[in-house]
Length: 413
Ligand code: GLC
Image 1 (cartoon, rainbow, N blue to C red):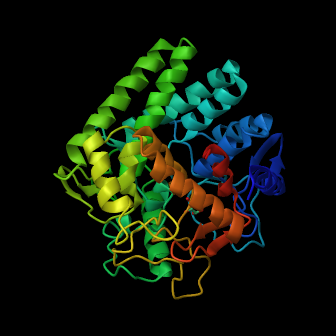
Image 2 (cartoon, helix red, strand yellow; image 1 turned 135 degrees about the vertical axis):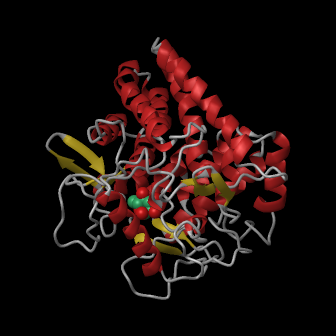
Image 3 (cartoon, rainbow, N blue to C red; image 1 turned 180 degrees about the horizontal axis):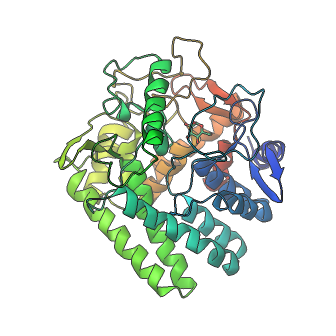
């Protein structure tokens, strides 16, 4: 597929999936499956749009931050209009217009990308308080012990809803449990938090608590980007605060999530007792994205895992879970016909590829990054704009007409 073909394909789906509501506009990830606005999806959309429609890229983020809570949290879903005849399940979030959980902090990365495309400093100034307030929320409400690591209250906050990293926290011991079981455990968490009015701060120790590697790595990078952007805007307080917190979380990741081999694992626990979750997923490569890993640690995971056929080196890279894990499920077949198989237990996703590629390039693994980009383009070219792909055959699964292929525009060959 040539670059021109790719842009035409992406433009088409972005136009088809654009929605307008009372002066706001946003892009839905997929008409059939995801008919609302999602937080990290909107950041991906803004990044893709910055290559061909910067006005819409800004509009996407303006719609997103318009739903920011007073306490700074950005909800992971915004229901601009509720659709009655759509199979998307009704989830009792306890809020009318939005969900009550969040997603990874990629807003600063999206704003920086728009700034690179437009040099519009006013837009950066407009977004900066939203980004900063969200960061402050994360430390204030998700790190009550001031460890430097922020915790998730629901796996969906990672963006990887059913990743096996969360099985233990959900008390799911069978690595091949049916999707419906996974979904209902996550709903139980929503119910529990809703009943407790989402007062997260003082209850984190008693409830679901996973300090996740990708989320914290994305936060480290988000703060570093914010510090840069704030400096350009002469916002010295935000610049310094963001820099200090980026360093703090970077240190905490090194101190608490790294093992003796240099592999980073998410951890979970209650109170002061924590335990590393040693389930291999693509998260192993995320310390590279934020410059948290040492060069030796980066080389270790690339050699032993990324380029190892018994782990992540499949026909199409990179599987979200390696072939060696008992939970590995290459095509999202959950042995059931319930709703949709959102599957982070093996398939390749464009967002994880995009994040890993950036990390590999940061450490000079250009050949490995190139392989992932070429394979990503093949997947979209041959199998269409799908939610995720089988790493063994390339076949597309899950939602169709899915927007995340737009991230290919930000992965130059
Ligand atoms: C699925 C994905 C999540 C995404 C959402 C909308 O739930 O797991 O990451 O934000 O769909 O595309």
